[in-house]
Image (tube, rainbow, N blue to C red; front, side):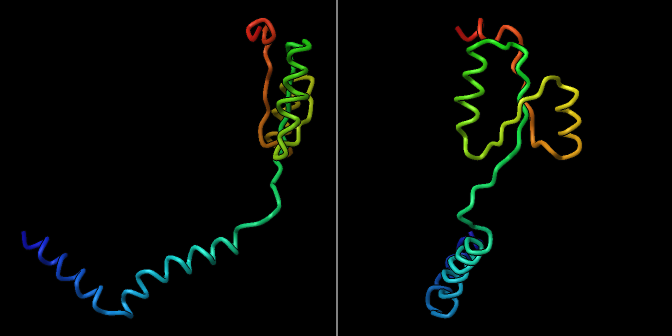
Length: 109
């Protein structure tokens, strides 16, 4: 009970003091604006990803060419095997790689 009374008294003191109220409301807004200016930007970051198409069907090709390639934030590169994609991922040339397994077209249809 004393906790609630103490909290109530502190809130009243804060609302009666214009300087404290200004700091309480002003600093978070100022901080948001500064962080938005510092870290915001108009450029879209792009992430290089690799695609390994083990299915090699028209449906898997359509998935790569239409679904993945249309995303502006992705730079899609085709790979023939997982080992090469894993090596590029290890050296930082790729952010991720996607493996389209055999039978993908049959499972989706």
